[in-house]
Length: 475
Image (cartoon, rainbow, N blue to C red; front, side, top):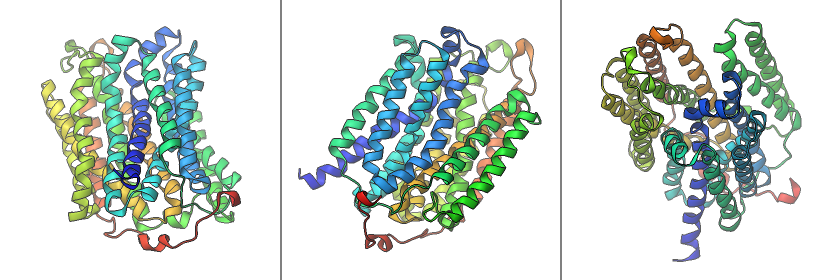
């Protein structure tokens, strides 16, 4: 095998390890928060920050690191982000206190930049004929890894202890960081100019304020002074960020680019996909683990509920290979819309037909098929809609909007499910039914937006092929 044929395959393999580890770390902590709470002697409100801190850190880091990678080199920044993910994971595994673990999770969350950087490297290093399949593979891995994290958490904790939920990703991402330095070529396409400091600070500020408001809405009350103040701060910082971006000589995020049809439709769809996916995978295990005495629960263990969700992750991963071929034949708009409608149908099924465990497994397989088509196709839409030197920041914002949608969907789902309590203090069955029906409506609305995705989105590839490259020494 020649070097030219080996290098793209090795590049994709290294990138796959990195994005998979990040995706798994997003979710595998969810089923074991109660055990961490007991072992580190803390309360429920505090232990939820083990998850929240990771998501907040990723939300802030994803677009910033994507922009820095566009400027100084995606390969260099990818190695840094994977190293930070490994360090943060190792720190969480060694955590002697809840404060230490939360801080470690903040460091690990910086690994969120691995996703947009990986998409950009694919565009730079893989031939146009194969880049669609490679992007679809990585995108499906980011989606499937979230579900896999929930599936494998139980067996790992039962066999090795919860510290290994962090040790295993730390080892994998550490090896991936070395692989990036050894096997991934330096970025040939870069964006001129330094990262503007003020827009970066304002972007971080409004993202943190918004996600904190969404996170605190249910426990503190949506009309509480804390939550309303956070929403107000997010709105003010957002307005200031837009003004700063328009005034900057080299903006952090090109707002005109964000207005292009290919980009804004992909971002709206990403919001809807995140809204449904995060909420469903976050609360379906709770439905499964509800005691049989409730009249509708299954009394499943962590491991058992994980296995029931496995079909969703498996089918989602397979769709990463199928979606690019379908997009080539049918166009992205129809593939994405069909995927969203499949997910909507799955949520309707979960709401109305869930008498046996196999019902939920079958519906989640359909959901995995749908979201696999969406995520694998959406990444290609974003990459085709922007110049090559802005792939990092555009992919980062798309991933971030999906995360914001997931935060809002999870908060909404929690509010609906916990609105009424039945016997034993458990939520009533109607709460789950109404929650999943709302998710179905959200996915159907997103499918309508997906039909607006242009057939040939954004800037043609040939436009950026001849643009001059920027020397790293000038950045």
